[in-house]
Length: 193
Image 1 (tube, helix red, strand yellow):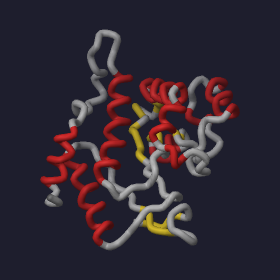
Image 2 (cartoon, one colour; image 1 turned 180 degrees about the horizontal axis):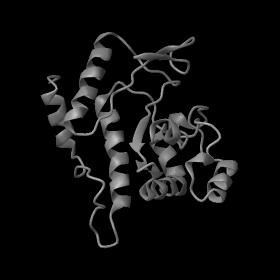
Image 3 (tube, one colour; image 1 turned 90 degrees about the vertical axis):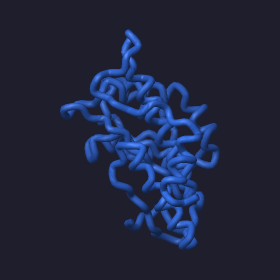
């Protein structure tokens, strides 16, 4: 837990940062943390955001699948903001603007095209973390929402990673799409039911 200027009602508030979660079993932590924060009386507000990071680096270079994902996000930006209408106009997760789109095209899909991190898709995270950061969703203490959003983005990345022959690329091993019953199982196994 650390403080962040975009959290809180009148200034800085707490921000929860998880370790890298690589398995469905790791996601149990999300349920436990949300449960604890709810029991302690924490709440989110319109300034809070849920940020996820997708691994974007392969041998120090950006994965081609990440470029495909960025193009998919850009092409379908309106639909994505339809999933998170409270984030429209939020200064911490701006839509792609003409300058970013032009820079991205001119730089042939380089993540150095971002001039700041406050876009809903943050390419600057690549230099710091080796990831692509997705900042679209509102902050939540609902673990089903947080886990579901992360898994949805992983699923999109997985679908964009499938080769022309229909087989997943060898370097990316993601679980099959999680069913709603799996989220219930995660919650039960976390001791929250």
